[in-house]
Length: 390
Image (cartoon, rainbow, N blue to C red):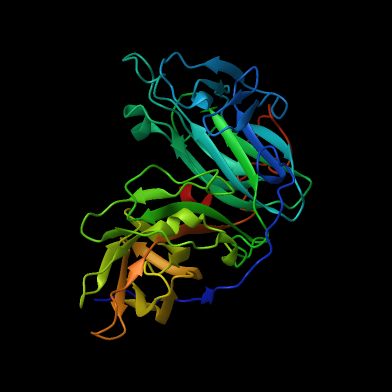
């Protein structure tokens, strides 16, 4: 039996020239108030891309700086961390000046692998993330820690005031271990990026951001102006590459041009069937954006786009200039299948270059009695638990 037909669908095509914004923080390449914090560090450090990461001490008054005793770390921000006391019901917060009514990409990183290397070490802690009083997600680094890898979470949040609080919450329902953080990025986005989302009432949590057909590393800054991570998704059967010169400024979400240099292309006279994202999703509304550009110069092809057997966009005409289609509230549940079907048997086979999926959640789902204030060290009893735990 087919699932119930998705509701509240809003899909649109955008292909228009937008003004290019000049970054205010020219040295970093980011605009407005943006932060790259190396948590627990005593002095600034510069990564392999030339980005400067500053110590976090000016933005948080709690926690204990620490050093990760592991040689050979390529990423210098993983060499230090800040741990916080195991105080049940407490929040430990960073307070960051921001531009009001802008939206911000927030990416905290947690590296517990070195601490977990010892057989006597406790399991990694599990704790909550809260942004401006809104419960975001629970952090669980166990699988990555076993693999010796770092864990990153990414969300997009509106700034309602002149300061934004990012907090780690100690939840008594989780493990008996102290919360910690290795790095924190808070990057202001251009006004056009994800602008179809109702940010006064909603925030976004990243599920997947993928560069189809790529076998290389993660696409990020400086190719992506906001240091978004575009994960490679190889497939020897359908992957192709091209050298099309797609202009990022032509897209509201400003994807990096290089994501259009690889693609999945269907075989002739066959649809392209893609299971993506590669993880099952809970039944909810999601933001879905798909990106396309013909790999042949001065060419176009037309096809239909389906998600889980429901028509997402009909007669999509893709040219070498590129375009994107998105839905702001598309219902997904379980594993997701994207199907691209040619408009006619004689048409060129369909293709896809990249995609993004975000979960949506309401701003203001409070978790603590004192949410919304800066309380690096203030213990606060739960006013009500997040709805996911009831």
